Amino acid sequence: MADVIALSDVSLNTELDVIMALDEEAQRQDRTHRVVVMIELGDLREGILPGSLLRVYRQIFELERVKILGIGANLGCLGGAVPSVDQLMQLVLYRELLELKFERKLPIISAGTSAVLQLLIEGGLPKQLNHFRIGEAILLGNDPVRNEVIRGLRGDTVRLDAEVVEIKQKSLVPAGETGDVTPFAPIEQEEREPGERGYRAIVTVGQLDTDIGTLTPIDPGISIVGASSDLTVVHLGDEPNGLSIGDVIGFRVGYASLVRLMANPYTEKRVVRPDEGI
Image (cartoon, rainbow, N blue to C red; front, top):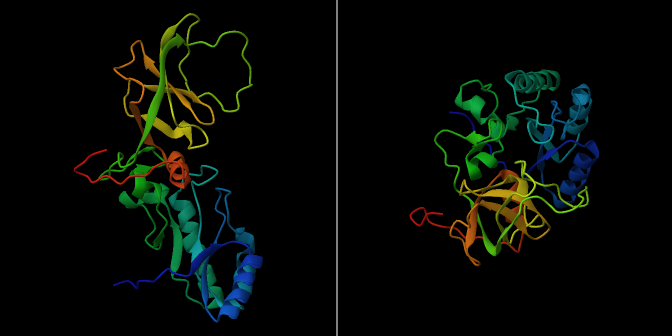
């Protein structure tokens, strides 16, 4: 049976100055702090460059109160780099190099995110990878690489309800000259013809509240047109779909919209039991 390592009092780090400051603070508190040093593998978010690997680890190993727990990397978090077996095997080889060079054990390889779960399911993940930092897949059941629900999980666990404050039949094309004067980019993709009309509703959620671009109306007959700071306009079609002022329109949320909603103190959160439904 593999050893289980408690990961309390552990931080992921890339800057030597920060790690040295952690060592000084740990000395003041008479504690030991453990770190996983992140390596840059191509996503360009964070990580020391592989060429400085030996130098950085040598200096950290000399510290009194900071202990290196392992090596890690981020993929698919910023630059859109899709994790590959080759990249993950680089981490395995880097750990082997460090353990041989310094004769120290590094028990953790931390590169598991929601973006590598499909590799795990398909049996292609290097077995040495043993630490996962999962967010999107746990909360939304989503594979961010394929943008689809992972087999065996649910993609409907979070729902945003926004109140309707206006419903009107309007022209679907702005009047007069248009330009890049709106503070937020439009979302609607469908081209509208001059003179085309339809029903639109305004709901009480906007760009200040969440990432509108990663919301999806639950009703497939409704589409998002765009949003200002505090309101979002949705297209209902040729009829108001039975909606009235005060009703709510439900949306599924993507990861970007979820994290902003959860950090937004003005959005009411409610946990619903499975038998109540959402």
